[in-house]
Length: 125
Image (cartoon, rainbow, N blue to C red; front, side, top):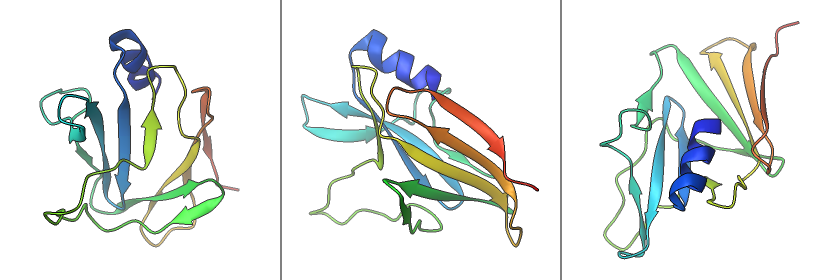
């Protein structure tokens, strides 16, 4: 997240992050086209899939977000929108992403604040 925030500020380009149960992907806003583009050509920010038995749970604005197993294909009249915005100003949509094994109640939690500060905690007790 810190690298994505730094990249957005250095290049003056808005970035986004979209989660699904088995992975995540970064995107960037293309002003000339007026739409978001998934970053498939950049090795650092290319879409990532988690190992088969791992999954992600997402919380935005204190609301649990129901994530699809994988990102669905968009219909012709739909526009791609990331769930998390990483702005060139350094601001980030605050979120909590929980990574855990399927059928386990424990995992790791990534908590990101609006100023980009983040922390990773284990929620095992």
